[in-house]
Length: 350
Ligand SMILES: NC(=O)c1ccc[n+]([C@@H]2O[C@H](COP(=O)([O-])OP(=O)(O)OC[C@H]3O[C@@H](n4cnc5c(N)ncnc54)[C@H](O)[C@@H]3O)[C@@H](O)[C@H]2O)c1
Ligand SMILES: [Zn+2]
Image (cartoon, rainbow, N blue to C red; front, top):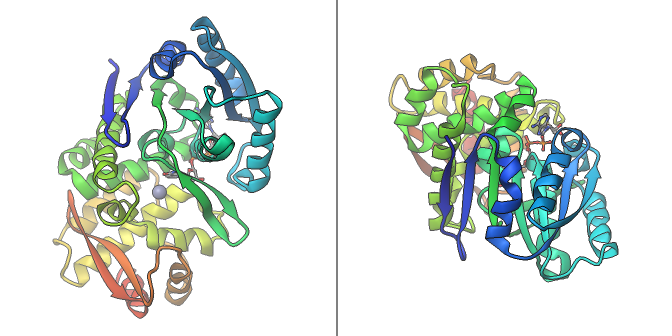
């Protein structure tokens, strides 16, 4: 059974979640944006699996399409790929009434969204997430970005989609490692906001992820509604990310984002318990659920290296860093600390 979550940011948009939605995408996009042409932006892994079905569905709804395929992988989330996308839009005479459709994971979504934000100073775009991570996280909320030499996501724009269409059937072709990546962010929502979601996930991952995705999207939607540009509450979504980003960096990005965030969550929960901020037993529950989802609970780098890598994180403000700490499952707080405390957190979280 499918479902729809409404996100009330800007003029608002629907997130449709369910099996078989790829074949209904044409109608759903047409309902959301009216008469339009569409540029499907997708990567070299996703294109052979799903591009034709999406094209067919759009064409059947009277939407003319062309498709641009970039080589899959985070290493291609770059200005050069963005530039290629913009040139292709221009070559095809793409106009203000046309629509960019991102088909794929967070990389396709971030780049297509950024292209839509800047092409002709903004055209509409639609997200069709095909990874669990994109479904629960990157496709909702309007952040778009590319990576620079100096770091990840350093150039970007806020741009909300017109509609998000998540066909849960597409998740069936995801490699286990990518499912685990998405589960780390899913578990994060439980720790942050919902003991009920967390307890549900403790029972094991269901085959049909529709309801899990619905809960995560609704939680992220709520946070984005109250703090679209990440001044306050949206910063909670960085749970596990300060240390997680440091783990990614120390591994030279050999450890993927979700796996690094998992380690970051476990470390900060253990540190929180030792410092008397986090209820006893919380770290244990977090560790168990991460391990059950084939995710790591620690990282093999020196405390000082992790702390140094975390300090270079773009989210630091002045001499302070704002950390997200669990009080208990379902409730977290923001705590601003001097930068030099970071190493202590990493050490306490060992
Ligand atoms: N904008 C945001 O708010 C936000 C939030 C979180 C993450 N992100 C970004 O998202 C990116 C990570 O997203 P991701 O994990 O989806 O990465 P991704 O897009 O690279 O996808 C992971 C891999 O899975 C493949 N793939 C995608 N869908 C598939 C399917 N259905 N079947 C088989 N293979 C499939 C891709 O080709 C790729 O190889 C990062 O760049 C990160 O910065 C953005
Ligand atoms: Zn993340």
